[in-house]
Image (cartoon, rainbow, N blue to C red; front, side, top):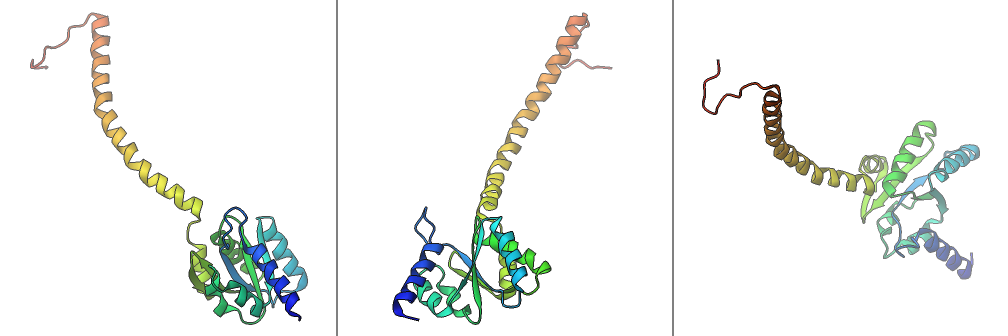
Length: 190
């Protein structure tokens, strides 16, 4: 393969893996689809494409050069044998969840590893661990819930005595409307 063709392939990798909004390299995971039949490979790709997740078969030597100095650099050690890069969706966590779920139906998928915020999740165990992490949106929702929860409890504590007093005042008002006597403060009832 000529140097010009290799450079064109590397530019293609960079354009696919760079997020246009931030101009940063996306997070990704590495799999092998070597054991999948052609029809199964197509089913996997179409299923992931519906969720805006892309699968791209890569050349290991060119990907190694392209990943150098980027967030995907830790994946370079895992580039052996047929490799495909999975990226897209809302995050690599979503990609990992979807691919791990697909393994039940397509056991020919081999999980090689993934990178999230520069941390390498290596092998099947690493990718399965990654798939259990919350996505960015889920983490934000959890934080918001934790922040709002004490405020709700505080408002409940503040409203509690106020509603008790309101209930007592309502009972007094009802008795007065009926013309009933109200016991003076400190008087014994009974």
